[in-house]
Image (cartoon, rainbow, N blue to C red; front, side, top):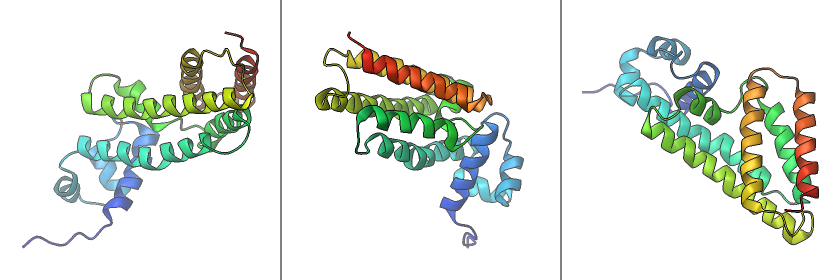
Length: 193
């Protein structure tokens, strides 16, 4: 007869998310996970099969929590450029020095694991779609020029977001990052094409 679990699986996933977020996939061993989560390796294997499966679950957890919070912020009421600026500033100051778990994962693992890539690309696509919706709202409300090329602006913003996340993780000065954000916002506001 199997022993009942003596831990909360969702709590373990949340703690594992934090560890993988801080250290990355490759730098986190099963021994590290066991020590951080206070679980025997046998319990980890019995519940999650292996480190990779647990890692995939942590990506899903992150997307359901942090990514959802970012999406909610971009959908907030208010002038679109103010909403965008507040989100970008929040993004570089919310988890100072950690970057974005999805961006970190994409940078570390790239295209080496199809399931990881599917999850990171799905998260990126949500960001792109939410940014496009915000920009279209800005055009409709008169915050942005009617001639703004939304698709090109989304790609510019998405690339800016990824760069900001990497720079934030690298410990770059928040004021310098805020300068880049303000210039991006100004560029969008005055864009004629």
